[in-house]
Image 1 (spheres, rainbow, N blue to C red):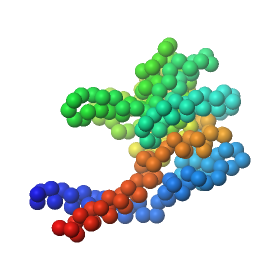
Image 2: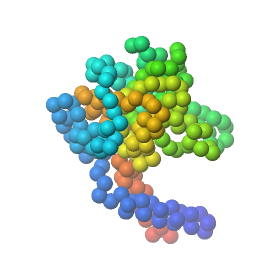
Image 3: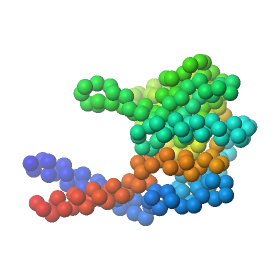
Image 4: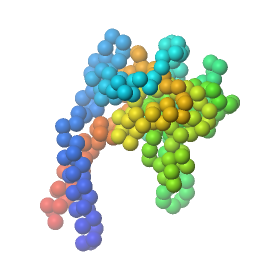
Length: 241
């Protein structure tokens, strides 16, 4: 019992530290219902393209027809809405004007003992569901491909989306939103750019739908709310002893 108490007290200290570190960060709920502008964008949301720094914007080109990008990104959003995970992410792979693969963020059972399952990212799922050769194709994804959270001797040996996309021969990636998770935030874009993948963006008229897909689970968005609840519970538990 004393060992359990020490572990819980350590957890409490960590959570208190995390909560203090996030003081003053705006809540996602404050942005969810804010009005969009005339273009259907969501400039006040932390994930808005209005907040993407210039050094990342220069990585993007704008060669694909805007309507084509809008229509296929809408398909990626529809795919994302099939996911039960938060943040919700969807992806479609397009070649010669046709969708040859689609996927959304989901779980995959591994075994009957821990770890029981793992998360399959939307890009991974779309590549698994291919009905054709992806070489030279365009990937539309609602959120920047990941650059971290891997296990293995190196990032190249792991199933990191910004690694497996160029490896599969994808020529262009169209991004719905730049990820604000510090684990990724621009790193996925930079890795894709270095691999020779052309980057495009597609958000006009869709940004409100795209930011809604982020949900409450993204790093640094609503996490302080959950930390506050945990802090309150652990404080009450500690004082009851």
